[in-house]
Image (cartoon, rainbow, N blue to C red):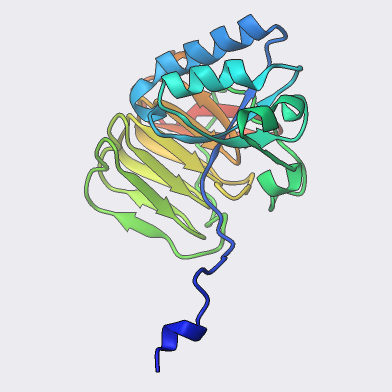
Length: 242
């Protein structure tokens, strides 16, 4: 008797994946495309094949954004319900409700693309306990370009360098004892208390609980120094650990 005859041909399972939400704030379609193109130019290696959800503060045709996204190798999975929703079906894109995009957040914190963040000079703040309350993952080797490391349910500790084009993600905090030259995403499931700590700050992108900043908006006096990154309200904050 063939056991597979009575078994289902497919299985449907719910999963949670780290996906970048790109929110465009420019009012005109041409300005929106220009902003998107500039953001992609800032970190081409890290952007390649990145899965994203599109969002916009103003009515914009999905087709123009989709064209630029594909030009840079981005993988658009859908759009957030809102200004892009009317034109999404014609582009073959799914419309995702807000609660599906931020399932664990008590409040919605939009990621406004490469919004300017303030450099805050403070005394060193001790790293709090694991934000996600889970088990930490320790990576003892450098994270090389093209690699993605994810610490589900806890903190991520990287003893070496995170190379350009590499990505480290954690549901809790991220500790990097080498240089951060790639992408670091803490609080991937919406934990607003998650922080990023690194010995040498040279990132392509950093994010905490869905709010992020890219390289060209973070160059300054903290570049190359030990830095911590955290979320204060809807803004990312940066301070030296020296």
